Length: 353
Image (tube, rainbow, N blue to C red):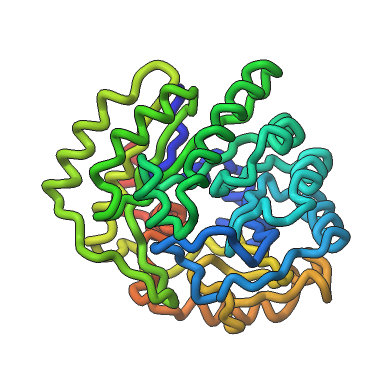
């Protein structure tokens, strides 16, 4: 399959929006992440958002549909349903997916896969650009320990993925179906087992990514994985990337964890934001729940009113003075920030292309 640029960014493909930003114009985002549900059916040992306490709250159907229309109106290109909890715990998520596609948005989901039954897949796959399942072990026992769930959930996920692949193929849906594993000391010996299982059932890719500690989360890993272990694993996984299955070992992300940021300001915020299950719009994932980084709430105002509002401008002004070395490593906007920093801070001799 073609390279999806998983360990990079795609902002350079949005030239018109970039030009507007470089001219100093106030632009709308290209991409937005939305949390339909505040609660989750798993309790993963690495969860970034456990500090939000898995509240049983679900975004209002009418409010979200109105917001999706607003996003399409201001030329937002794509949304991903993910966030604080498991998206498919919201009973209306299939309807949201279909509606978002109907109004002109590209739609994706990041889920744990337990609730992505064949019945749900039949409803959703035609409208999804991609779906990625978080599956953090290769065996039932380890999966249960890492995900904080019953062992049978592992079997459900594998079954649901196999069925989704069959439904996709039978109907010719273009949706890319992939999986992701956070590399931990507890699962490092099971990556190849998982890769083999996923390849057999027709999953298109597996992302292997590092654990990144959220600033407000109490979770941490039991030990650091050594460079020697990473190098050996990366080499062993290369044999799995063949034909229609690819391993995305995020080597660059592992390296970045040990290096200082090459940029001094967060420049990517105009291109992105996150909407949580209570309707709040935040700058980014590392600051969910922090009112200092909340632009407004879609229950009170429209997305366009919030984006153009005074409060957002005040927050961006304050963030322009933020010491980014204190922010969470490898955040969603890290690669975009590296790119934008280069555009704003040109090196010598740029005309000698």
